[in-house]
Length: 84
Image (cartoon, rainbow, N blue to C red; front, side, top):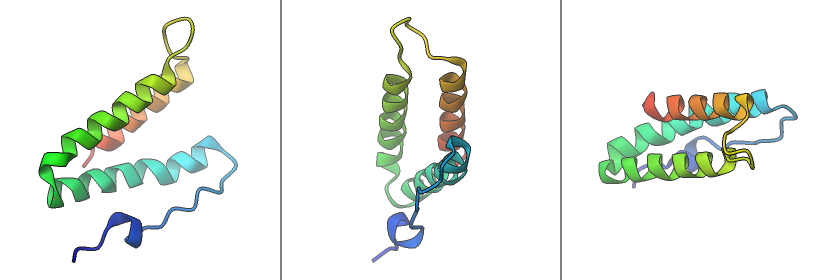
């Protein structure tokens, strides 16, 4: 049975800053995409799209566009997904 990302790389998100959390989460997204492409290629695009939909929903504001900080984080998330 293949080793899953969850078993191999337990993340502990107990940091106080967004940057410190991003330093853990963004590489984990890349690793998850890489693992999906290897073990379940058909699901890789589905996972990517799901993460991006959630990111876009979280970035929406009442003014219709995300703040510069949220837009930057969205770009970083997309970059992490595409780096696999």
